Amino acid sequence: MRKGLLFTLMLVLAPVVAQAQIHQVSSSSSVGNSTVQFDLGYFALKPLDSRVDDDVLLNDLQCPPGIGACQPLLFEIGDFNGFHFGGEYLYGVGMFEVGVGVGYTQRTVPSIYAHLTHSNGSEIEQDLKLRTVPVTFTGRFLPLPRGSVVEPYVGAGLAAIRWKYSEVGEFVDAVDDSIFPARFVDDGVALGPTVLFGIRVPVSNWTFGGEARWQKAEAKGLLEQGFLGDKLDLGGWTTNFHFGFRF
Image (cartoon, rainbow, N blue to C red; front, top):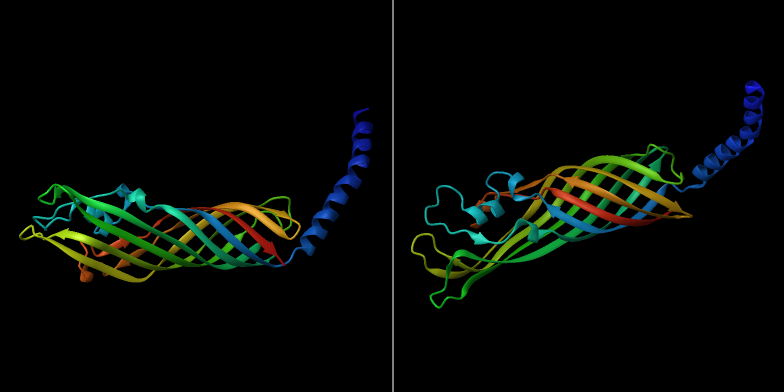
């Protein structure tokens, strides 16, 4: 009796399974290899407790050892977190994709001296500004074929981050405590690894989804421009909503 039911069930399901396989193959074969994708999201720098030694922001907050009369500034690392947008071109071959993309994040953070003011009691103010433009070269693996109902993926690659950092405002001399206006600026390119994972939902020739991306990179040489540290830790997480067109 059980064998008869099993045989009948196999006869009923066989055409359904075959049709699903035919649909999967046909949909995958009809999917274009190229995708132009746009990202909107949020970038968060590494927090205070995990930043590299001799980091400019870390030293601004607590003053580096060896500078006796240094006075810390008052701000939070999280103030530099903010809106991120970008775009990416992806090319797929089978269950793999390669891509090149560019992003943009910029934040201006107001700060004051934590323990010092002007003689009239007004704050000694500065603006700390960080801009990053990461150019990424990535590879992805798709556990499911392109054109599936959902397309999860994981990947890794290289990030070349064009950065610019400045501190503009009033500062206190570490020798005689005099207050002076100044502008400290530096820029460059920092290289480092990036790792990502996400999921897409294809709808006709469009794709919609979300992604999380981690990057690690350090800007160096800032001490020569008068900053209180020689490095600027650019590592952190980016979370994105993305949509794209496949052709």
